[in-house]
Image 1 (cartoon, rainbow, N blue to C red):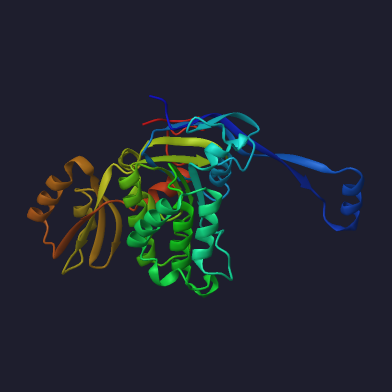
Image 2: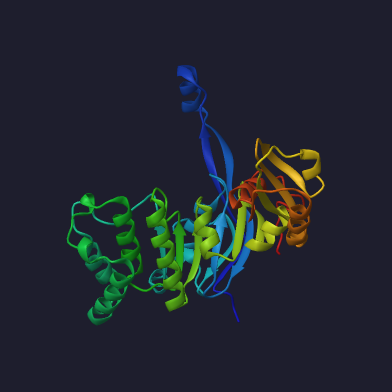
Length: 336
């Protein structure tokens, strides 16, 4: 069966004008402009099947948004091939435009001085959604997002979280098969982030929508995506299971210990790597496969007031990947 999204050696380059400072630099640039090529995306390849939710990660400027814009047809690729739902995105065919949506957390489509319902009606007309279908979809979105009190308020009077809920509803009124979500929870408080995550998961469950999600909030990715694609400087670093990457980068569990008396660090070091020690607390990194046995041996030999197991912080692991500190992740691609 064909993949729903196919990307093969996709590249997007820009020519950027470089001007020297001062009046002399302006004059030289007037007669002989200098350019440099910025490789926003360089030979990226991946495939995504129908119904998958994939996290698309990378530091600022990595090429994530550029890739999503190419896949949504907003940008023409410099080279390579992209195919979404059987369509070539940059051709902007109407049949394709009606089957995907692009939500960018830092941009909005809602009309600022009008209630969200006005934007919804405009989108109904643009996507040619029959009235009965529109009413049914709106009711479903209302049930999931609790839109009722917001539909008749001016957009500029809504909170950021309320606007984001309405943005998602406006983007999904035509019930798209593919969702490109670029930082959909940016700037939201933790409660609203959780609400948006729950909504995306439920929409995917109900309709089998394919989702590509970019986010700097790792809670979004860990809650929604089993698979991640990591990109940096326009090149693909990793494409595979998120849990497999965590276990590879951090093959240990974090053991947090609390003591009544200051512990002997040399004794603790026999059970694992002492990551941190501060007075009556200590943190050990113990091999993942032997974590339970190690904890049992430690409790039998050292007096401990409290003990807790934790997983390594996902943010720290992803930061190591971004910084190039993980051996074996090549600038070509690694599939796990």
